[in-house]
Image 1: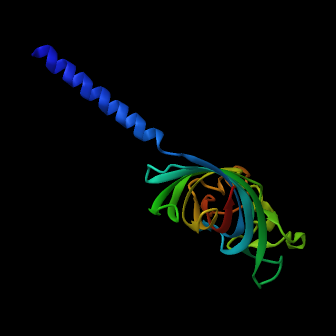
Image 2 (image 1 turned 90 degrees about the vertical axis):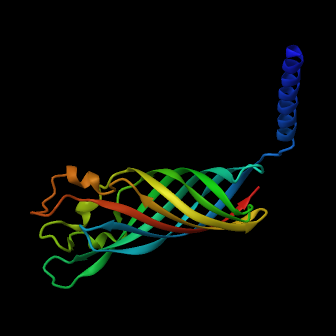
Image 3 (image 1 turned 45 degrees about the horizontal axis):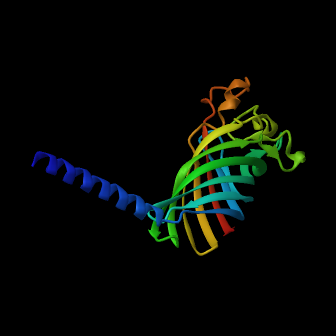
Length: 225
């Protein structure tokens, strides 16, 4: 009787494992390569400067994994973008302020989870992102020598050398059918993008150290192959 119980238990376990394995074999995981492009709205959230967001453009590739039996999909993304931000300053010897436009080139990689809200047609996208970015470059070199608002001796060209490596978080929504999707994404910088300015011995008087976090909205369209 005891041996019969053991044999019955083994038979049930084998049946369960066999059934589970057979069910898993029925799932067809799909991989895809996507091309994406769109526009951005970039800003630096800081108390050191008076900033105004400005538009730019973004493009990149995505390698996606569609997992039918899970409540999420995943993707690896590589994106290149050129972003613009305006910082308030004034010409030397002038009492009139104006916004000086800077541009910044970025390259980032991200790993995103795509939580299925309505199957694959509407997903909540969230995940970490690593970024390399260039210095802040004046779009118009004639604006060199402008005094940054709130400072006496800080020039527009002095703040170019921002931190080049940053860690971000991304959250957004993707909407579409089959191979075509549109995506709205918000990217927030967890690291201090202005931190490198603190190592440059700039003449900022009694002002606090530089601290700022990037804020980026991206609106893109993507086609998957």
